[in-house]
Amino acid sequence: MNRNFAVILAAALVAPAVTSAQSNLPRERAEEDNTRFGGTSAVFLTLPADARGAALGGSFAALVSDVTSVFYNPAGLALLTTKQVMFSHTAYFADTRHIAAGIGWSLRGGDMGLGVSLSNFGFGDQPVYTEAAQEGNGETYSVSNTAVGLTTAFQFSDRFSAGVTGRYITEGLGSVKSTGFTIDFGTNYHAEIGGKPIRASFIIINYGPSLKPRGAVLNEDVDAIDESMNVERPAGELRTSGFEPPTQFRVGLAYDIMESSSNRLTLLSEFFQPNDSDPGVGLGAEFNATLREGLSAGLRGSYGYQGDNRDSDPGSTVGFRSSAKDDDALDGFSVGGGLSWAVAGMNVGVDYAFRHMGILSSVNQFTIKLGW
Image 1 (tube, rainbow, N blue to C red):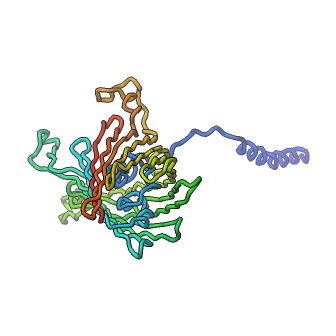
Image 2 (image 1 turned 60 degrees about the vertical axis):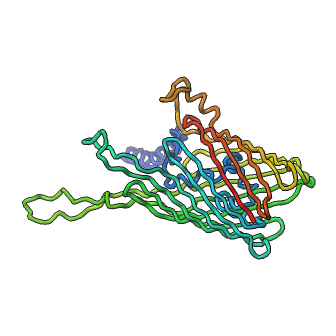
Image 3 (image 1 turned 120 degrees about the horizontal axis):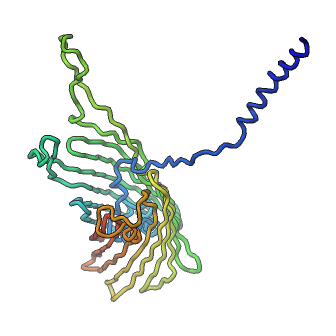
């Protein structure tokens, strides 16, 4: 009996150890992708605000030093030496359009920059279709997404500047609207290597709380009430979820491999990590030449790589004339150019960009700038 008791006791003591050892054995785990593809709001904030930046891709953030800093890197506004205004227009597919405008000032002898920005994306007067009125019920709806920003930047030394942009955002789809705010923080380090300028940027853009849709169309009477109770149906509101803005972390570098009083060739690169997609990289180049006194021209091009986050059969047409494979090959490719000339104490600039957007075809973007 004592022997049996000893065996049982030993088994009781050893069993937990064996179980623990088995639980500590390495297990094969299925890989999971927790990236929130398409899970953000206010995505229009990621659209390029001007043609020069569109032609150079996101890597423009390290080079920018004019009024468009209010969109790309607030630190660049501290390098602005004049007053500038800009306006840009882009016609996208499906009759959507994007406009952007900004104004910037150089203050405190060039040690500080101040800017205001406005951007809007949307479309209007689209017919409303319902199950009962499949040809349209005679009503229309519009989409309008707007951001108004205030930028301030400081030149802390002859090599370093930093800035902040705060934006108030509204998104409207018909009668459903959401509001919120975002903050951009950027830095710019500028020095020389081999007697040629080099610039580096570190920025975090579109950081802020979630935007939650609200509107009268979400209100309705509660139906889950027994009519025999003889009580009024209380008002209810459909529950909606909030979505974060498209926050991105970007690191950029720009180096003038050729620089003289009349010509400049700059190479640019960038790494970026969005919160709703895979990371990507961008490469770009800009050549600027003085044609004659007061007149200069620029040529630009870039290629940005980011996973399309979709699996498609390379031979399929996915509803388009050309195959997805052919369209993806040029996805992220941009080129452009511009002219700048001095007129009556003012500087006028006109820029153009052509952007290929994969299976969404291509777009043309135009920008005009005025400095004094």
